[in-house]
Length: 401
Image (cartoon, rainbow, N blue to C red; front, side, top):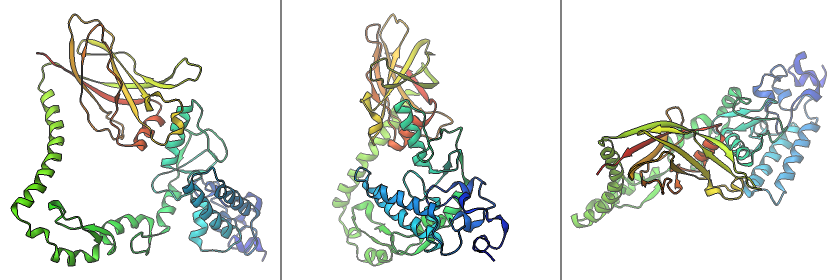
């Protein structure tokens, strides 16, 4: 029996060694169906036979080693590249554990880490985790370019790329180390273990609400709570702690009470708004968003938005924000005092905290200053930038004296 037959499990479906994706970036053979007939050994770059190094896999390992040695690359990416290069070299040489070889095959081609949630693939089968995929689309929007796969440079978009469910399931079954007890668990069970089952997970004292600052492993919690001094505090000491808690609670209640108060106004209007991307006419163009004209409260309005307050190169910044302004386009006979807020649209999953803004519109002062769109973090901002349009819901309340 030849070496190729042994590597393919004795069947003729192993195929020629040159047709087998190997090393890093070979995710197409796992989920796209192109390598479904090649057998698991061929997918790992072993078609040349056991013990014979795979040249394509070694080339991939050398490419990762170059990234690891690149001083311009981010430190975290250099570390991941070094770890993945070792796994790729071991896979190409036919050594190492199966999970180590799968790591080099299933890792994201951008961050070189195993995907934690959704996995997307380009038309050529290269894998990207959801965070990197969204980030690539957002960067392309900011630079007014077509997003491309970092491996093969083919065009990528939400319509061109698809989920790779086979890779997602395979990754969820790979072992991963608990950060507390250092035991190995399937990735699909690791989160539950760390939150509920691990005896070494970091936990807090049940008396933290009355000021106990203790943090420690779960197996020491019972001993600590039995000896904790906070349950024996005097009433005066507890009142000071409760006053601090009440202050933070009052701020939250003030916002919701304001919203309920506005809902009792006579003139209330809301509408779905769609921000569309445009470019300025400057020599160095800048991205901005604008909605078509819409009518609320018998007046015509427009919303505009900008990224990072129109800084020169927002694509070079890790921290991204959106700010917006409301413009009154129709003429008014008297000052128009309004409160307004933007919330997420009915079909979006972006997280926006409600913030109420106030402004008095006149014919001379018909546009607000740019105010922050209260997005939770830069990840949520990237979700909006990666979309073709930004869909939100505007509420307007006319204040009558």
